[in-house]
Length: 452
Image 1 (cartoon, rainbow, N blue to C red):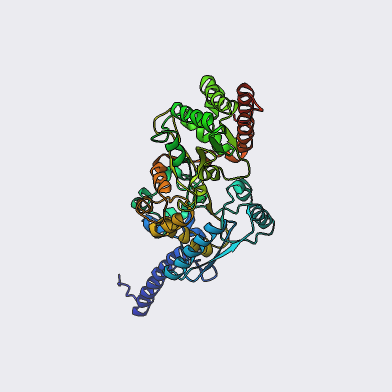
Image 2: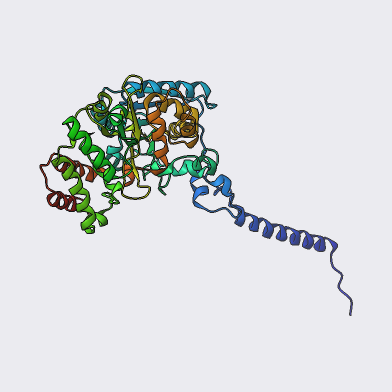
């Protein structure tokens, strides 16, 4: 049989076809992975990057804010009284001159607190407002409902803008409202400086009565007060009948009127507190001053004692021989009421929000700024180094320097999230008990009805 020979041309064609077939398979696979020309692949958006976890995440960068504060101007609304207004102006000028981001702070004051409240309430409707407002803690619920509060947490989670552990440890966090640094969501509500309740006393009157030192407990207070009343034939203690006064004295009796459980169950402790205050009033020891500064009665010698905030204390050279001490107490290391103007950040743009936070952060971490504000206003600083520096500041009266010792025991009156709701009831009871128009059992019934 004759062997059949292959055509060389046919063999070459077979090789070419085989190669083309392999190339076709390879191209098909690539197109399956990359997409066809009619279906181009999409680059991931910022939203998709945030929504899908990376295979190799970088926590240090994941929470960082992707915008900057440089060159922004922020406005601060407030209704501070003249001394505090001047001090705030100096602080803003210092920040404007020295901050590295070229942020500018502009102050816009209203005539009084009521006008400021009306301005903020109007802003809720128009959504046109400042970046920071000082002193409207009573409107937090309305601002939160309108989604106007700036959450603090993103700033605290970003290593570029956060407060370090050292910076935080230098603050009197015990006096911060419960809606600030310690809140997981971190709605911004930070103290500017602190008004801490103290017992002011007239040194000349104490010397006249042979009293060597102010009372450290309520039994000593009662004895000293009674001696003044018998000799001078007028009340010894000047105070304002409000919620702050009632809560502050309550803490020195071991009664927390901000704690609903204790209000509802502590019969003996509650009646002891209310009975003591009623007894002082009944014996003519209390001068109730609704619209006046109780400190004026001490400065003039008309009263031996006054329960006041440090901002109500006058200048020692102008107000006679006075000083201040911690409140008398029946318990060891009681809380002392702290309140005062607070920063609240209002939501505008991300860049403006960050610039506003950096101004607040700068103030919180700058002891000289807080020292200057305290020296001018007698509102105590929230920074420990500023408090220490004030102890040797010759501009500060000795009574204020003594009041600085109370800062570690101070507690914000706004530590209760329901303060704004229960404050009217507390003030009503304070007025009733301190003017003898309400007996202790009646006052207790009202407190238990309102504080649950």
